[in-house]
Image (spheres, rainbow, N blue to C red):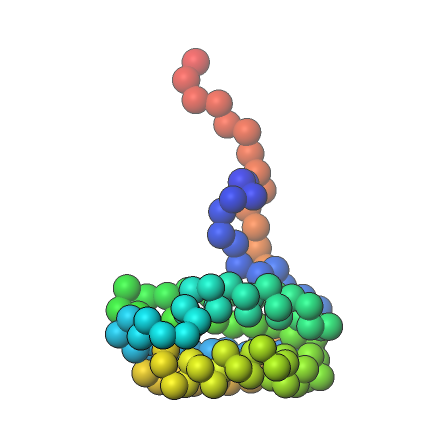
Length: 126
C-alpha cells in the first residue's frame, strides 16, 4: 500500500479514550481573523505534542457535516488538550465565527482491533 493513502488510526491497546467532535460550519469564513483551514491545520500539529495523544480520524460529508475522532491514552491528555491556550483561543473564535453547531462526546474504548490487507505484487498481462 502506498504511504500517500488516507488510512484510519490503527487500534491501540484498550482502555483508551475517544473524543468525538461533530460539527456543522457556518456559510464560509467571515474574512476577519484567522482562517479556518490554517487554524485547523495548526491544531492538528499542536495536539500531537500532548502526552498520550494516539492519533485522529477525520471525515466530512458533501453536506458539510464534519466528524473528527481524536484518541488519547487517558483523561489527563484530554484535559491537557482542553486547557491548551492556543486550542482554547481557537475554540472561542470557532464558536463566534465558524460553527453553526457542534457536539463533543468523550468515550472510553474497551475493545479495539484493526485490519489491513496484505500488500501483494500482482503483474498484469502475460
